[in-house]
Length: 258
Ligand code: SF4
Image (tube, rainbow, N blue to C red; front, side):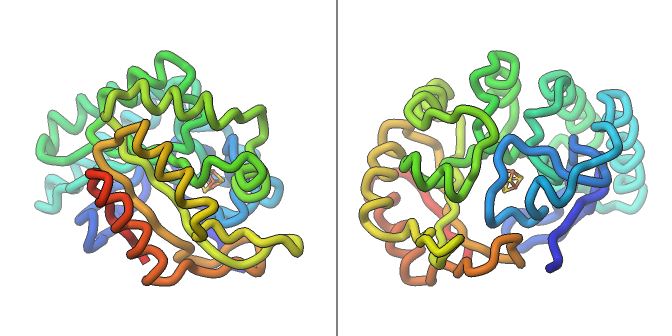
């Protein structure tokens, strides 16, 4: 099985048709994964298979390595289009996430003011005021909401602490539209049970929650790489297109990645 553990604290740049040139910022250890979820589809693998021995990078290390990389990129005339917080787990688990956001915005303004700052987060730390406030300062605040069915969340996202989806929805609403919801749709089985969230039983209540949260955009996607759990299947193009069109029909921009 080939899951990915990213270098830390800076990786890439990665060229993508959708994002352009994306420079990755990984606030997790370089030799393993730290996440408050343990998603069965995680491209980094299961938490228990990648326990790190190294610490998280410090705030100073992140700023220094990012500055060096941006100086390099400026010298090569290849500026990033986006600085993306992603990598080996959940970036908001870093104890200095909020201060690091400020450092990254400062360096972005200095070296590549046209670049966007994006954060990919699973929404589990947004109850912390400093995390909420820091996410309000980034350009693309991309927050995960795979379903609103608690049984499905426990089966597929596997939070490692209490997770109340209704509270999460309230906290997502508190961003007052300054957020992008990201949702994984898939089919298949895990441990002999269906993990298909493409049917109306899942989509209709999720759509109702999306309406209440009123994000600036929704991004839906499906499995793209090898997953740690066996038996998972991609949602089809048609299923993703139908779900996308239902989001657009309630007046919210939505993109589907296959
Ligand atoms: S939230 Fe993201 S990093 Fe964490 S387990 Fe899920 S997919 Fe992996």
